[in-house]
Amino acid sequence: MGIASTAVWLPEKRDGAAEAVAEDRVEARAARDLGHPRLPVADAISAPEMAVHAAQQALYSGGVRAADLGLLCHAWMHYQGHDLWSPAHYIAHQIGAHHSVPVGIQQICNGGAAALELAVARLSLESSSPRHALVTTADRFVPPWFDRWRSDYGAAYGDAATAVLLRQPAEPDDALLLRALNTAAAPHLEAMHRGEDPFARLPRDNSPVVDMRRTKRVYLRDHGVEEFSKINREMIRYVVTGALRDAVLTADDPRLRFLLLPRLGRKILEDAWYPTLREITPAPVVDWGHDTGHLGTGDLPAGLNEVLRRDALAPGEFGLVLNAGAGFTWSCAVVEAPGRH
Image (cartoon, rainbow, N blue to C red; front, side, top):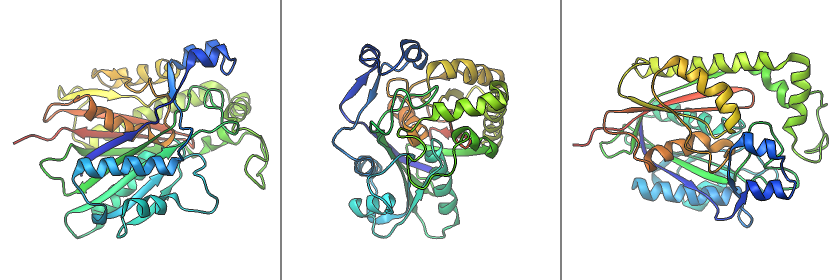
């Protein structure tokens, strides 16, 4: 599968960690553990509008017309601006993808990876050639209903949109080749984001602010931290080894240049992700997203964009891009820089 292009759209405004600590909007210790110096903030633009900007950038960079898209998958985790409404159809309408089938994906923070997986499966089934699909993500974490610094443990949330343009079959000038995308889940961990709350009649009936800390405390009180830590390590190992197997790579292959982490807080990465990944492969483990914070559904697509922005792979070299999200679900993508002729 060819990745023709990628895009990340970020607002200009930033909310600095130092300012948040000084204004008592986040604890100093939590800010240190997160390790994000600043977070992008979208004040005057909605999440779907940000996605339109990212989509247009990806189409322009990939040299593909919106009219040639057969599928548009849009993933999000937070409110998109209207009730009983499809942001995926809005994005398709705004960019002129009138021949596409728009699909919305809600798999919380792993939504971008899930959208990619669905798009790959759909492209693989179609018979026309070439075939194009666009994956977008966008989230805007607006106070007072979402506290980007305090609504969660181990993650601070930045506003952003991403886009990934897929092509099947791949062409020689594609930016990257997608060699594998391995996903696994532990569905019983859904209770970590439910706690003891009853099913509500309306949004925010149980809490006026999205408060994942509160539900996680209840879950960890009953089940302990070690159970989740063990499952997290096992699932990281499972998707990485599975992705390497699917891409026909060994863990010590010298062409494997890096493993790119999701945009989570520094402490959670150091405690769980770095040690687990270093047990699997000697390839460097890298964190290239700490400057934006967690982008909701957009971490994995933003990681693909960062691989290209840094020109991190020479022709024939491989990189792994990892992600995880509530539910819980874990994903690992293997990408290759195509040979240039």
